[in-house]
Image (cartoon, rainbow, N blue to C red; front, side):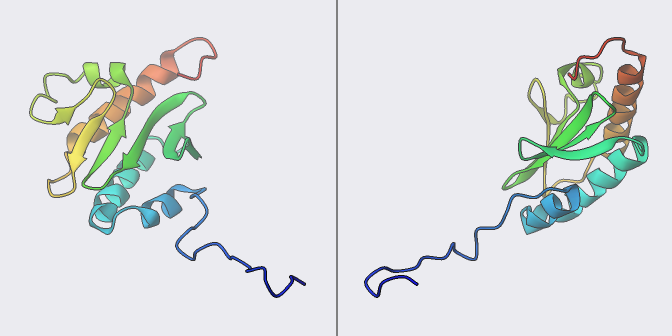
Length: 137
């Protein structure tokens, strides 16, 4: 029992544990992005149904047993991360989209480029399966 002059402090209810599964991650994402994130997840899962799903560094990953791709939720957009090489192979088609070296950024108020995402994901699965060696990346 605590003395009367010591306040007991519980963690605020708003602090929740970090997601440990992709479904939890999507539920914790900004509401306006959840439908995009669910659809992106469906596409990636259909392309790599045998891949291990994990949350690594706070981000959803697909691994087979090497890194395939990841995605992340942000305030106004999601980022799809199929590696720099994965994006480079589609650089011409990505010209009308916002990209960085490693990410395709999709604003929540724009439609998801589903066909392009599917083809990039299929490319990554093919490349990873053909690779030799044990490197994760």
